[in-house]
Image 1 (cartoon, rainbow, N blue to C red):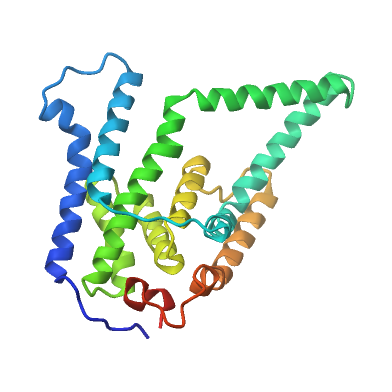
Image 2 (spheres, rainbow, N blue to C red):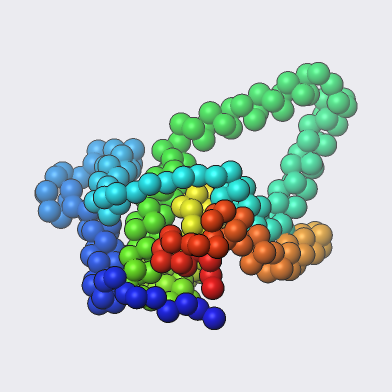
Length: 270
C-alpha cells in the first residue's frame, strides 16, 4: 500500500515545472535556428554538434543541483534485468556471429593464428568506427545522459515532493517526454526507466538501461528458420517479469531503508 506523504510543493507547481522543463529541453534544441536566427549547419556533423551543445545547456538548466552516487549494483543489476528482454536478440546475434566465424575459418582452412588475428583486427576496426561516429555518440552518450537527467533525475523527485503517488509518477514522466519527442516505444521504456529510478534511487540504473536499449533497438521476437530465437525471447521475458521486483528491491541499493529519509520515505516502498 502506498504511503501518503505531506506535499512540500503543490501538485500544480510540480506539473508546471515538469512542463517547463519539457519545453526547455525541446525549445533549446531549436533555439539556434528559431530564436538566434543562426544559419543552417554546413554538414550533419556540425548540426549534431550544435544539438549536443543545446542539450547540454538544457540539462544544466534542469539539473541545477545534483549529487550522484553510483554503486556498482545500480549499474549491473538493471543491465542484467534489461538484457533479459533481449534474450532473443542476443541469441540471434550469437548465431549470426558463429556462422560468420565458421565461414571465415572454412575459407582460411580452419582455426589458425592468422584467422584469430583477422577477427581481432575486425573487432578493433569496428570499435574505432563506433568511437569516431558522431551518431553513435548521440545515441549512446548525449541522448541517454541528457534525457535521463531531465526526465528522471529532475522530474521524479519534484513529483514525489509534490505528493504524487509512485504509480502515477511512473505513468506521468514518460507522458512529458512524449509531448516533446515521440510516442510508442519511448513511452513504454519511459515507464520502465521511471520504475528503475524510483526503486533503486540511482540515476545509473535507467541510464545504463537507456544506453543498452539504444544499442540493441527493438527486441527480436522471432527469426525465420531459427526457432531458438523465439524460445529465448519467451524465456527471457518470463525471467524478466519474475525478477522485476526482487532484483530492484530498494534494500539492494540503499542500506538505510529502515529509517528512510530520502524522497520522504519512498525508497522503502512501504
